[in-house]
Image (cartoon, rainbow, N blue to C red; front, side, top):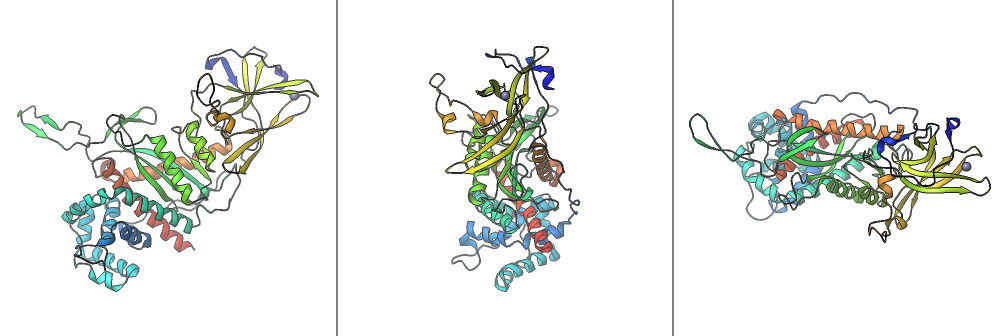
Length: 496
Ligand SMILES: [Zn+2]
């Protein structure tokens, strides 16, 4: 290939349109993976009763209920509520097992189901707590009375649940502190994947009042106060609320996924929802919350919503970040290398997320030729630093050069002209470049987590969340995560 082009780079590149340059093929280097990820057996379908049993057998659930509502737990002084808070947390999680709160309560009214719940409580908390439970399970009005209390304590519930889920994951052998695998091929159990999704509220009604055209009668409807129309996957319009979540799973182990953290993200204009942050910022916060509790979360994968500014912060905290490349980026000059002994120069740019040599083809076209990376290096200091060891091909013999792929202190200095940071390095250079075997492997992990998310939609009738408002949606999803994580916990115990 080197013979078909001139190895003399241009001195002063002109601003060219995107179509005016070509990008060379992805070279064989450290990011080329030979063996694909082993495929595990398919996940066994679990019955509703089995999922309920696993939920009740989850010790973390009782702990979290006691943390959020200590005064309502058995043994607390004062008037005792009819049902202790852990029953409501079980009920909340059961909504995703039985599709609606109504159906969950109907199941709890059945003597066999309620006996199952009481026996589960006996196993976890002992005879006193189990015998104190009423003879019949909670009804719809009990849930309707308690639900606002859960919504009032939503952030506490989210945080206590997150802390319990992260501890569960570590107890399951996920997010192990010692690095397994390599930097380029991190072990599946140490990669957290995140996703933002729009969940539909109980109805798509956007007008509070409508007039019946036949009768002229004014009709009032329930309208979700937070939902709005958003574009998902480029062109699909979806009405609903936005949730962001992160999870981790083991390789080739079905039902091992543990949801680690979640929150709502702003889904409408800042003016309409000034308190919530946009998806990318929420996802950044959630990932950092996980890493603060689990330093074994070595790698994080998200979608294009994360840009250089987000990646720089994550890398600083020690994360190896992978996201696919944002399309609208122009190649950016990195460094012109001059070698005295051989008298050659190499003009290195950042393009398609990696270092490329800028060359001119025999047709006179600009070509950015990806430079093979021989090694990815990690150094832990006050801030984490990652480097690429480049092998710049040359007729005089290859040149080895080390370039930072994290935002350096120098990059961060403000440019006197623009007043902005000098070089948004993490926007242009990626630790694992997209379009490589190593990158595709990590992308695959995220697609897998997307299907985990769609299970949430599928779980509920008509792919809707049985709740109104962003907080209502988050509450339902916290319950869903408890049900799902309880399955992961029990499967792990059985296989040990
Ligand atoms: Zn050279």
